[in-house]
Image (tube, rainbow, N blue to C red; front, side, top):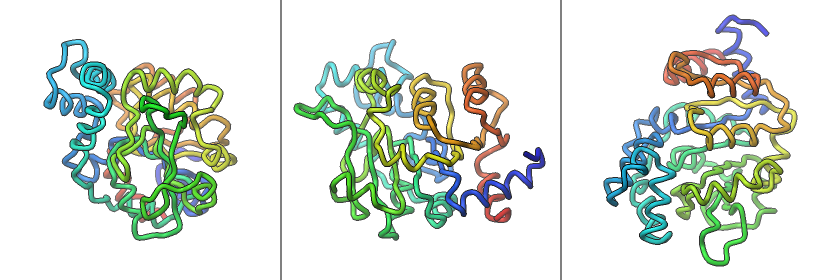
Length: 278
């Protein structure tokens, strides 16, 4: 593979157009869209802390903050607060719209905002699957499915859609599903190595394809584990747009493990260069 940035961008654009490269979106995509909702785990922790007084051990960590609220205020309170925090719609960035127009068979979106959902909303050839918390009484499922109108649908219906938006941590739209607490992740991570919490449609669509990571960081074990397991059995190649100067040791290890080609630099610059390279 060439090390020339222009050649790499052209290869990425070609693979995206062919459906051979699948977008994997992180919270940085919401920041690119100039969202007014929290666009980092720390910002989300601060937003939760603005709603409920948190102990010192939970400050700055959104998973721990959410767990404290669930344990002391009930799950319904936590879900209501998350819905309030993400109630403001996020207008899609040009990169969101570009990805929607390319119509990849699978888009993985790992943040709670609705920008990618909104970018797809003008189409009718897509469906969505979201990870859900099993903290609700009687809930035995790992995920739920929705059609392009945001209505609940059968898994079989979503599985046949040409475009599948997969939000493994849930999302504010259309139904306020949030995988967010430490307890949520303990349950999911117990079985994620055997792939049970990952929809079959995701497993099928990742085969013989690579992933393009946009707006992602992997400085948290939960985020690293999801990336590792969602990429499992995919063929590559994989790319990641990252400002590489401040990556942690664990992030470098993950990038090496997954065999990612890193495109150093800000996401905005990549977004501006990609259409020209197509």
